[in-house]
Image (cartoon, one colour):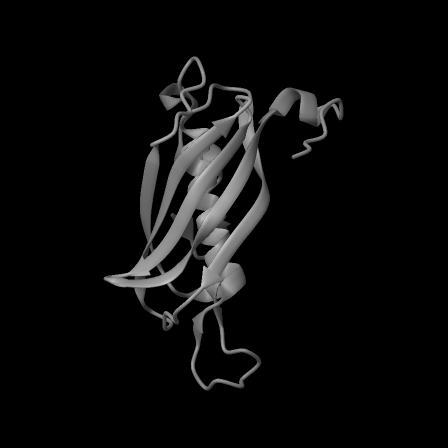
Length: 153
């Protein structure tokens, strides 16, 4: 999923263009799981106040967003991508540095063909670490690059 020296792989490196569909294939029920290790930029020790390094809430949210972004990207045609605009999650349990966790994104709803609503969760084995929802909006990358499309929820 990532390279320690450079961070997460780009979506284009994760999902080659020749593996993307010719037409949008985002439908409720799509699901993607990935595994990750709690390390590097994903951890915090809350300023030294807890005496151990654990998965940070911002790190957990980043993993949830990325997994949803990859799921969207691999089901959208060339020239389309998504941007996140809402996250509503609960961080309910700690995952210590070095833990192996799983992230799951499930597309639950597509609104107006452009708003994608996901259920997201992070687990360590049988334990739930975080759970919630995330929303992304489909954008036209070319229009965004020219400034003619500014995403809005």
